[in-house]
Image: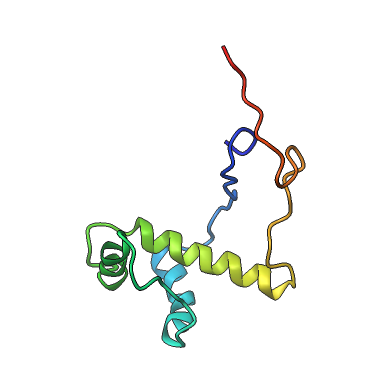
Amino acid sequence: MRLHSPVRPILWRPQFDKAARLLTQAPKFQAGQVLLPRKAPWLAEHVAELLGFLDGAHDDQVDSTSQALSWLSRRIATGNPTAPPSPKRPAGAPRQTTRR
């Protein structure tokens, strides 16, 4: 996926459980630093999952949100808020497809 797709997932192995990861990001929510769109088809479901965390049936979006906030915080703290271009495919280069 990293070589043949415009989507470039970041390989990351979390150190703590989901609750601890969200707890470390809670101050950002409390300080109003986490912004969500006013209108989005997924917004109600996402907010419900955030507010129901630990007691809800689903928590994947919450975990993804906390990990994204952690990643962004690390990037900003190191003075490098943007991801480097892929060494296999420079930014803006067209994706190569193979036809069979």
